[in-house]
Length: 354
Ligand code: PMV
Image 1 (cartoon, rainbow, N blue to C red):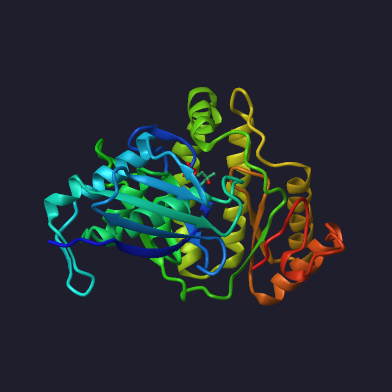
Image 2: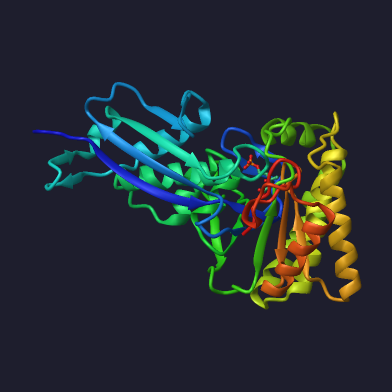
């Protein structure tokens, strides 16, 4: 029959961990050494938009990221593509004259076009949004009928943190016990409406690419750090329980205390790695001190900070009022460049605000 191009477009926001994932017990399947909890951002900022297309005219799987072709030969992409193809189903769209039988997916090739509206690989979890979006859009295209948690286990094999971006709101990635990783999935703890007072400000201290990839960083940490063993075994399990409680009760003081402590321990674990990994810079440290001083001055925490594998600060404010005051403090201590407007003022290279 006649076959034409068929496309699907999806948008996926990134997520920011408040109890961090760091360290794998299985590198191929991407199985973590501890549970983690994250907040998924609003889709209008920090998101990936991905269009996927299938056509009998395509001879290879190909992908373009931010307008540049990237290789799909890596094991992680291949694992995701294989998992999705094996779950594909019949697709029929009479209007478009498209009919694909389940078994055809093994032979057909896809083209993937993806855009991040934020700096790639600058420690803003770009891979999280990217891989989640890739898996979600391909699953739609291929009529994969699995639920979000099953899809999260596929996205996880592309990038660990990606599994948490399949859901909005507050999400837990359960590390799981099985060797095949089938129970290492994301679950939603609460949806985006549950705690909508929170305002997230992202201070982009530097939009340069990070020097140590999370993959090699985690590997070095697991191989050389004593502190990571203590963290994974003794610290995180307790914090996961406390964080779930803080989220359920919308208890900002507990939430902020746990998020800041966990970010600091993650960066301490990086320092405890051989060779040590420095993701934060002087500006990051000054932002931490400024938030700590302010929270102490107020008596109750107004803002929580958390930093991933890079120097950029994610500041989670108790409410809009606290967010406005936080922004004023940022503007005062880290003055913007003269030619920028309030929506994109500059700390290091650039700042996104939300
Ligand atoms: O999924 P990856 O390989 O990008 O690792 C993410 C690690 C952190 O962002 C530092 C922590 C986390 O839980 O997202």
